Image (cartoon, rainbow, N blue to C red; front, top):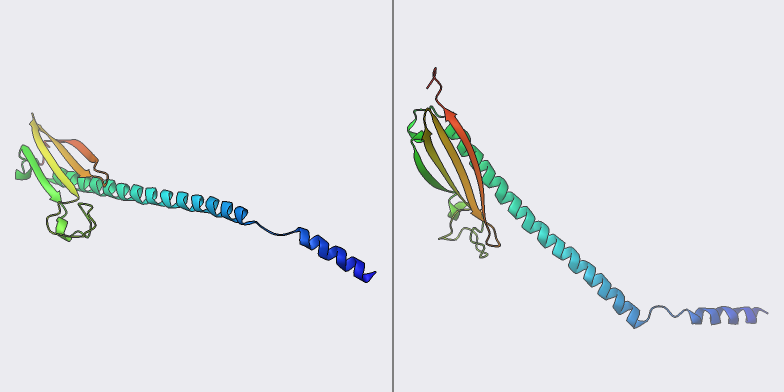
Length: 157
């Protein structure tokens, strides 16, 4: 009797053979597609973070220049009507690959952001426009502009 039961158990075990080579290959293909999708999402996230970083920096530099110009007395020489350019920061010392060729702080790179502002006299007010412009790694031109009016203060200016 004992021999009969052991024969039945071993016969049942022999019918369960495991995975075939084709099943393993199909599983590996599905896994590879999943990993490639995650890698593509990661690349997109890095590109998005870089773009957001540059946008934030440009907005901060624009805001900083605007606040500086607004803090000056109305008759200050820096508020003379005209157009003023500035490239920020010095490209050779900013720790960034500004021309996207894989070399950081190489000679001949242009700055990350071009900051320009203009002062226009309009009666007893000055229209101040500050614009930051930059180029994305994909070659797109982006700009951010702030405008304000600086009025003459009759008591202090």
